[in-house]
Amino acid sequence: MATTSSTSGTSIRLILLAAVGCILFTAGGCFFLFRNTQSLASAGKWVQHTQEVQLALQSSSSLVQRIELEGRLYRLSQDEDQLETSRQLAVQLHTSVSHLKSLIADNPHQAPNLEALDICSVTLIKALANPHPEAESVNAQLLRCRHVLSLMSNEEREILLNRSEATRQRSQISVVTEIMIGLICFLLLCTLFGILLRDAILRNRVAMASEETNRELNQSLQTLQDYARDSQILAIARDDLQLCTDEKQVHQSAASRFSELLPGSNGSICMINSSRNMVEAMASWSANQAPPLVAEIFPPDTCCGLRSGHLRWYSPSASQIHCNHFIGETPERYLCLPLAAHGQTIGVIFIESPDEAVQKMVESRMAGVQQLLQLTAMALASLQMRQKLEHQSARDGLTNLFNRHFLEIALERELARAVRRKSTLAVLMIDVDHFKRLNDQFGHAAGDAVLKEVARVFLDKTRTEDLACRYGGEEFTIILPDITPENAWQRAEVIRQAVADLRTHADNILYNSVTISVGVAIFPHDGSSSELLLRHADAALYRAKHEGRNRVVMNLNDSQAQASPEDLSLSIG
Image (cartoon, rainbow, N blue to C red; front, side, top):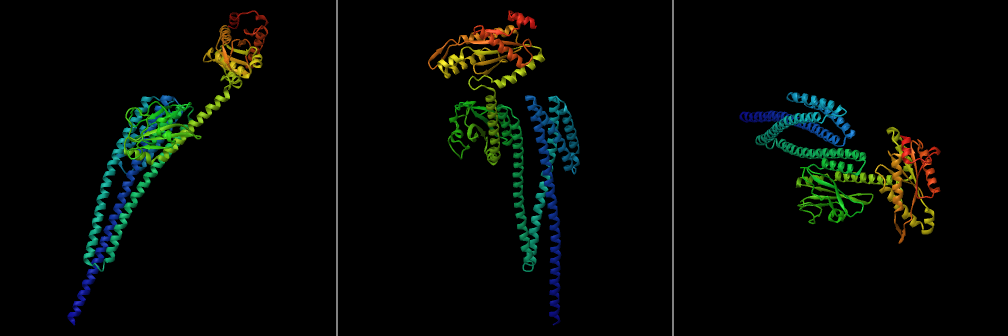
């Protein structure tokens, strides 16, 4: 009995000792795991912090590249907006340096680089503040900034590698420790501590799930970063395209933005001509400065994208029908995007992917590509519409000469210019002789044909700076800036004789007796305002009609009634 009691007490003591040992072992193991988990979390934060520093450095490098790009555009176009953009980007670069200081405060080795980058950004701001910044000074500062950023990126990359390796080792130690604790607990008391083993297994599964979740979060973060980058590029593209004043600027701006949106790709922007029988390459971009792959001019039916009217990929796994608008060897992977606006196809954008990685990148950014495509199409359509409206508002529909409204504006402008230059200016008032009789005898179609031919003579016999306008009906006005009375008389005689030599055909009828009468008024002799000049030119035209038509008459007052153009020139001089 005593022996049994002693054995029972020993067993109890052993069980208690085992339980206490297990509890202590478990407590020690849990404490170790807790500390190890804290260490892993801390290491992960440092890795994330290093990644944030690298992102900030990449952002600063991107600002330096954009400053360099805007500087080049400014030197090419002398557009002050480009210079102002460079200045704003330089200020952003200086701000990013301040942000970097707060991020890298824990790394004293980066302090000299940060100081150098700060000085470089300040010097760059001062260099760009000059109204006409020197390219060499700006480029030197950009090169220095790029060098410092490269040194800092290399330093942070090395730190990231070290911290990642330390995190990996700690993770391995953590896994091994967890397995060992589980095995020891299993060997000591499988039944008693089965629940603990199950919890350990469950904890391991949670860790794996956490890693998978982290991977998914990293992918989502990368996707969001790409989306933000694409949105920024599209916002800049929208602003740039709105500032474009001609189609050439739109083509160049769009090509630049496509290059930024799709790094590593090559491409061209091609437009269909007004007769819609040819497509012309207007702008291109290349990742490796390679020559364009698309022919400068090609028929529309050689492009499968234009024939189909929608986006078309060509790749080894897709359609095997090639487009025929390439120079030399046909690329293996390319995309043709029809450029359409207001329901009409106006061109095509060609994008080539040199390898499969670039192709996947292009496919992943198709939403941004489509948006940039629409922005480009709308910008081109708006410019074309504006040009068409401007042409219609300033031109006469029948003769294609400037209309009377444009004449009034242009004459005031030329008079102001003549006043500033202290030069003379001539106004010719022209009327087609017996035009009403020609209209009544042969019909309006014949009259329109005569007016078109007369207008063509005006365009052929005037200088580039001269302005030929249709005043109304069969009356025309020609403004001759910076011309002497003698030369104005001679120019009017040349025009009159050219019209007299016209042989106009309409409805199989030959009209060879078309003549004009011309009245000439000279600024400042005949008036200092547009109203006086037109009135005196019209009075001279009336005299030409009264004296028998088909002649040039200069507006002369009574004291100059018999003066020649040479005499008038001397009197004005």
